[in-house]
Amino acid sequence: ARREAEEAARREAEEAARREAEEKARLEELERQRKEAAEKQRIKQLRDNWKPKKMFSYTEYNDEKGEQPRAAWMVPKKVEEEYDTDQWPKKEVVLYPPNKSLPSSVRNDPDAPHGFWFYTDPELQPDEDDTEWIPQECGSDAPFTVCLPGEEPPRGMNILSGEWHMERPSVWPPPNKPKTYTVHPPNSAPPMRTSPSDEDNQYGVWKVGSGFPDISDDDWNLAEVLVYDKGHEPQNIDPTKPQGPCGVRRGAQPDKNGKYDPKDTWFLLPGEELDDDEWDCNGTWILASDDDWPPYKEPPKKAVVNHKDNVHGNDNGSGPEKAVWRGHPQHIEAGNFLPCHVLAYKKGSEPDTIDPSKPQGLWGLAPDAKPDSSGNYNPNDIWYMFPGEDSPDEDWD
Image 1 (cartoon, rainbow, N blue to C red):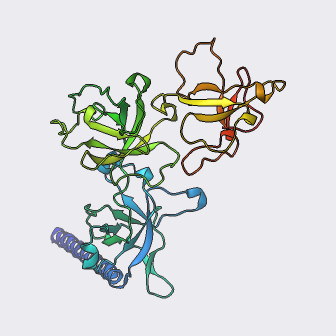
Image 2: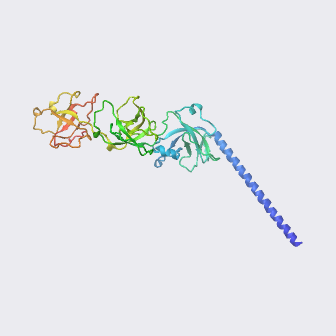
Image 3: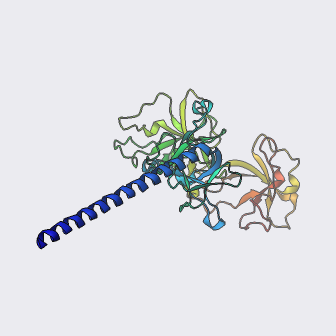
């Protein structure tokens, strides 16, 4: 009887422990459901009260200046490989509340880029006026993430998301990563490559108009240029760097790898133009290294140099260019000078070999010399140093 009583007491204690565990689990489940319902209600309240607001999107920012991005682009790896994200400008975007869709006028406007935004840590608090919800503690430099057009935000209960658009006028799409091309003389295109690799067959030729000087291909050098696709040029191109349009001959066909024959890939020199029916412009080239410019040796121009007292008038129009001597012996009077016909080479276009027995020297322009409306300079502003003389004391060009 004693053993039966002990066994009954044990079973009763086990049953009580089981009921206590079940009650504890039931209460924990109720608390979880309550918290989940409260979280859903809180997020619903955020969505119902969140107002459209403008903010800047960044790809990078200056932390030393205390510049904190309000939103950051979500850049997939495929985009990083194609686009130069360091060149993306800071853009202002309008974030719409999660419970509101973009206006149809924006959604259907091809010039107004739009997409999705999301926020993965929705600890948002109302501002003083209780009209806008702003992030307080977000644990990241950019609390809001802006998806590129066509990209989807991640899914999940704790993700607050909505739509955005960029106000017009907008520069879109952003600049892509440039390709490097080697440009050859106009009539010396390299053979077509058959490799599908982007590193191969990046070649083309300079294309010049009918008014361009007749320069032998032997007097041209190879030049490395960076090519941006049309519409993807960076906004901060240095205007002092040589640049121009590039494209392909009208009617040219690419090979199976999408590559064009180098002789059909044209690069226009700065200032050169072609008729639209001659070619298809598909981008912009920018010189990669200043050492490659100019890519040709300009032919020399003819000039007539004399003592400054023998050069009359300011006209320097038709015929050889008139100029004056500098650094000549002072004891020789102007009447003893005769017009001297010379060939003037631009800097960087000098011939490889110059006969040392021939009189030669430097030439340039006087300080602050300005051309007239026709591009001609006053003869007294065109200086030719007497043979054996160095540069003048003045800051000349």
